[in-house]
Length: 361
Image (cartoon, rainbow, N blue to C red; front, side, top):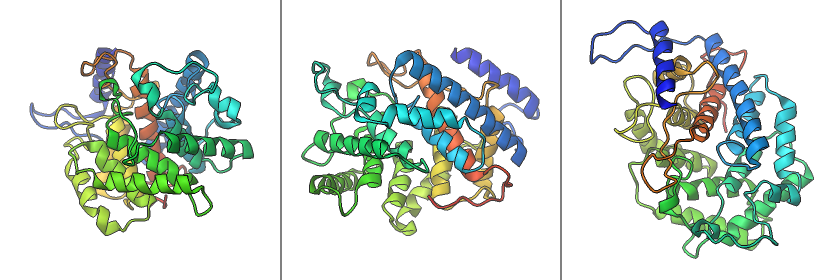
C-alpha cells in the first residue's frame, strides 16, 4: 500500500513539476486559491467517507477517525467550505449527546464493565481529550454534549498522576497520535483549557495548574510535535508572542527544500501530517498565507494530494514494539488529511484569496 501511494505521488508529480537535474529539489508549482479550495473539498469528501466507515465498522471514536476529522470539518464549515452538516452534527451527538453515548464510543470507561487488564487500562484514553478539543471548535453544543465534556474533564482529573502528568506506556506508543508523555500532556491541557474556569471544581482547576507546571518543567526536545504543541498551548494560555518566538523560529528553520515539514528529522520526508500541523500552528501564531514559507507549505499540500482526497503517508505506529511495524495505514492517512485540512481552511478560507490573513484562534 505504501508503494502504491508513492507511485501515485510520482505520477501526480510528473504532471506538476519540471524536469530537474539529479540532486536538485523538484520545483513545487504555485497553487492558486481555486486549487487550494478544490484540494480542501476533496479532503472533506475523504474525511467524511473514511470517518463514517470507521465508526460504522469499528464502533470506536479513535482520535484519528473521529475527533480529528470532526475538528477539521467544523473549522472548514466555519470558513465557508461545503461539508455534510448532517454528518457533523449527527456524529457529534452520537459521541457526546449523553453519558450513554459517551460510554458507547469505546473510549470512556463503563462502570459495570470488567477492568481492562492491559497496562494502558490504567491510563487515560487520548480519544477523550481529543474529542473535547474537537467539540470546542463547534459553533454550538447541546446541554447533553456539554455534560459529556464535563464527564471527560472529570475522567482526565481522576487519571492524573501526583506529579501533574498522565501515565504513558512507551512500549505501546502510537506515534504521532500518542508520541510521548509530554505530547499527551499538551493535548490534555488544551482539552482542560476549554472547560476549566473560575466556577470549575477546585480539583479540576488544580489539575489544570499542575499539568501546566509539569509540562513547563519538561526539558526542551528535538521532537517536531513538541514544538508545534508548544505554540498551540502557549497561544491557548495567552502567553506572549515573544515567549513563543524561539519555537516559531525553530519550526521555520526545519522547513524542507520541498516546502514541507517532517515528523522526524532526518529519517522521514515531508508529509501532510507534519506540514499541516506546522502550518496550522504558524497560522495560530499570526502567519498568513502571503508569507513565503507558508505559501510553499500550502503548495506542497496541494501538489501531493492523492485523487481520493488523502495524502500518502507511512506508519510510525508500533503495535508489536518494533518501529513502524503497523501495516494499517488508514489511521495515519485520516489524521494527516485532518491536519492538512485544518491548515488549508484556516489559511485560505473559501471565497477568499491567498492574501487572507489567518484569524485569531
